[in-house]
Amino acid sequence: MNEQLTPTRVALKWGAFLGLSLILITSAMYLTGQTSNMWFNVLTLVTMVACLALAMREYKVSTGGYIAFGEGFGMGALLSAVAGLISAAFITFYNVFIDPSIQQRAFAQAREQLEEQGKLSDEQIDQALEFSQKFQSPGFTFIAGVFGTLIIGALLSLIIAAVIRRDKANPFD
Image (cartoon, rainbow, N blue to C red; front, side, top):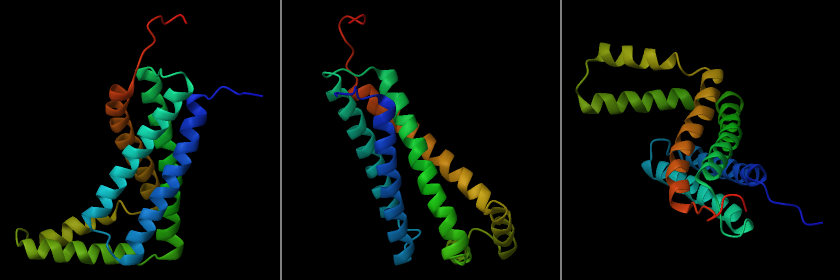
């Protein structure tokens, strides 16, 4: 039986793959203590672009070389939502159960960086860190992770879908 490949099926498959890839990248970042290393952010972005492009390409090949902009964008948004749910669940679980002290270390590192810059007084640094601690609850971390991944993925999908799209000459075919 030859089943038709749907955008949803492709998005779910590649979303799970991206989510697991983001877990690996995050784990490597946490285990090496490199939470502020920009190369992990670059690696995350490259991985997202690659998964989005490969997913759209897979669907395009399965449809005989055609993919509409809307199909590509929708697939990319769904893929990003799935990846965001998976990676945000892992990050929340990690921060709550595996290493709850990671947030304290991140705040200590942020304090050091702000003090090195010398632009803020100690009182201003305390206020800034106190304000940011209000947004470190597990629920907020999860929601921010899902929506952050979704927004970045949707923006990337706009670009990739615009580049990869190829409409049929006759839309009624």
